[in-house]
Amino acid sequence: HTAFALWEADGRTFDPSIEAELVEESKLCAEFAELHASAQIPFRGESLSQTAIRKYVVDADRNTRLEANKARWGWFAEHGEHFDRIYGDMTRTRNRIAKKLGYDDFVALGYDRMSRVDYTREDVEKFRDEVRECVVPFVSELRMSQAKALGIEETMYWDEPVFDLRGNPAPAGDHDWMVARATEMYDALHPEIGEFFRMMRDRNLLDLKMRDGKSAGGFCMSIPTYEVPYIFANFNGTKHDVVVFTHEMGHAFQVWSSRDVDLYDYLWPTYESCEIHSMSLEYLTWPHMDKFFGDDADRFRRHHLTDSLCFLPYGVAVDHFQHLVYSRPDATNEERRQMWRDVEAMYLPWRNYGDLTHLNDGGFWHVQAHIFEMPFYYIDYTLASACALQFWLRSRQDPEGTLEEYVALCHRGGTLPFRGLTESAGLNSPFAAGSLKDVVDEARRTLVTNQ
Image (tube, rainbow, N blue to C red; front, side, top):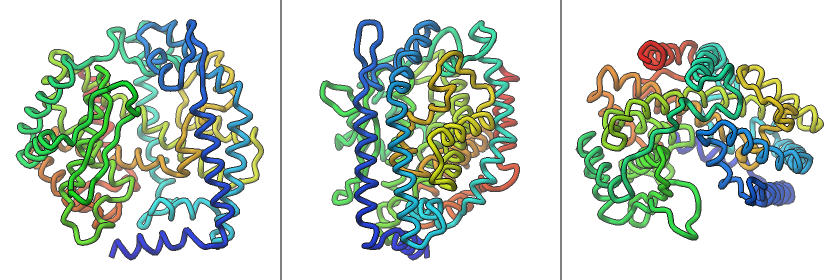
């Protein structure tokens, strides 16, 4: 039974003897969060937070992007030693916790903390190899095509978020218009999903409008007492609104569909499986994107697919870096930065930081909160994306049958671990050799042949 495996893994991660180390780990996480949130980045006469400067980092004007990146990474350079010190203390503390609990290293403890009960670090290594061999060469091609589309010789780091000179496509209406279009979309997509969305809308379980004082970000949570999910987001008039909307709806529909499972532990699957439902719905709604983007719908689809493929190498680089770090918990700060430079060379060979010193010095990972606060929680996004892309591929051949498979997967909730859920949906295991070949072949036809 899945529950027993989950409970056993959870039980292995605690003993009263590690209480002092857990307190220390928590303090270090709080110190990181405070440092990260304290950023006041000087830019064009303003003092901006990490969130506020992002709109300039993706600006359509190339000089603005470069200037914003210099300001942003200049702040990280000023505080680089502090980030290094926090992380060094974290890795040593976590290693002590693992040793006290009887683990060989923190990697094994990290996997138990993430409830990974049916795959190993060796499996994850095979998946990273698959991405490196199959996806990295294709993304390298996409970066060259991107440079051509932008009219530049080479796609520099600050160019990566912008795919063409027209800027990013945006939805054609406000919040109420978006909800009306979404109602039409989900009704047309699948009767069960349409009925569910109307319930969410009518019971005010969608909090999507941006307003003063509202927390940033977007998420989905469940309210077990009432057996309903709740979606929180901040619409800002960009294409991201549509991505977040469909993504969080995938989470919400899954937890609604599995609300009658036998055990509460099965309401949600483990992290990598949860993200299959959310990412897959982003693709399964593709045929209806004209409702939001009109004549720009196809451009949105191209951007969305390109974003997803470009993320895979970065996601596995973050994971590989963490495996290296926890295999050598006493490494120096410079050795850890070299580890990052090594994985960048392996998975992101196109990346050129120009004269951004902090990034050339191996400091990019300082921006990734997961590395500090939730060790090993990142490969989950890439594993789920590998599965969601398979749903995308199948939906192009059999839209109705793929939707039924998707709905059935949502109903299973967390009754099976990751391998079991992917197998139940007829998906190729991401750990199998060649698991991404068909996806990359179809993406090449879509993004290169048809451009």
